[in-house]
Image (cartoon, rainbow, N blue to C red):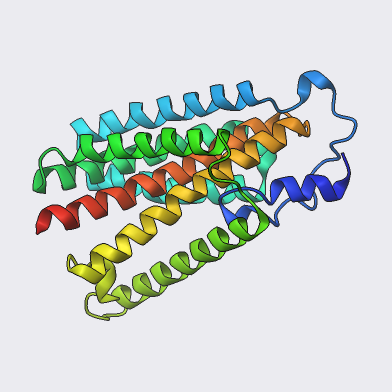
Length: 252
């Protein structure tokens, strides 16, 4: 596989910040067959990451603590950055990332559950239902990750990220409630959350394509962990946005 093909495959990730981080990665052409990325291997590693996440989420759910949540959030962010810049370390950092995010997700889910009983099972069901539905749509060709589709989703994702960063800065420096419609449970707030959930969900299609193309092109074995990590990042984002959307709907 040529260097151009390798970089194009990496660029298919549903997490756009990953796309330009691989120019210094190892050569793929001479990788032995047994050390190449496979679809089954990536699926298995995704299952391992989900197991780590659910295990630590159970701990945080049963022993809710701001300390655990903070550790999970900050640790998860640091591990995500390390994985993004050093994909070869994904075999170590991806499971640690999943475990850290579990601590955060378990704690924040308890907070939502206390206010809206039953929201946890609703959000989990919708998240994995969306995952299954989009996988079917991708495999049957109903949704095709064309270049225009990819550009649209990556651009929208970057725009949402920028908006969230501005909102956080405003909150930190006394900007009232930040950008109002992000938190509002009115029509604009619900519409915004629906849009964000849709973009997060469609990022799954790009993750599926990245994993499939990487497996077909025989990328190095560590990319199985990286592909699973990429999918995990999207699922965490999707779950949080679904939690927010359901809470806005139920508050009315």
